[in-house]
Amino acid sequence: MFKHTISELKEAMVCLEAGQVTLGYPFVPHAPDANFRGKVKVDTRKCMGCGACANACPSGLIMMNDGPKERNFLFELGRCTYCAACRDACPQEAIVLTPQFELATPDTHDLRFRMTFRLTRCIECGQPINTERVVNVARERLIHEGHEHAWLDVCPSCRRKTAAQAHSHEAEAIA
Ligand code: SF4
Ligand code: SF4
Image 1 (cartoon, helix red, strand yellow):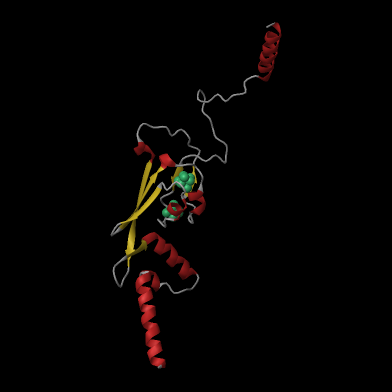
Image 2 (spheres, helix red, strand yellow; image 1 turned 30 degrees about the vertical axis):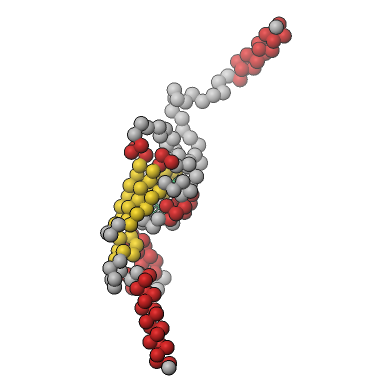
């Protein structure tokens, strides 16, 4: 018993000498370190609606749906594991994982985020192709590199049909 009390007293002395070793949070604000991965945020000015983040998210929380005129995104951030795969996949560097970590909420709507982008249509068949922003970014790059860009206005299916027709005309001309 006496031996036990001595050991406890020694432990108490060690603790007193060490001073405060725990964080003051939540009584004082806590600033996470620079590499902390908190709430996902999308910069909608940079985002072009390509969907690379939706394909990369292992939690499947970034849902992308194409309607007749628009592409819609829904982020269900309540299921986020803060892995940063979406950030790493984004070609526009539009996603950041902010220092925000106090995310508890009684309303799941608080952790939902939506974006909508207009779609371009194939000039031949009228089917949706991609978002206007994706097409514009691709066009700018092609123009900058001195390449042809009119094909961006035609859907892959119509491009294949045109290529097959051209091929068959060539074959007829040779025969
Ligand atoms: S951080 Fe990970 S889990 Fe969260 S949205 Fe991005 S890819 Fe999905
Ligand atoms: S990967 Fe980037 S640019 Fe593409 S939809 Fe996601 S946030 Fe937008």
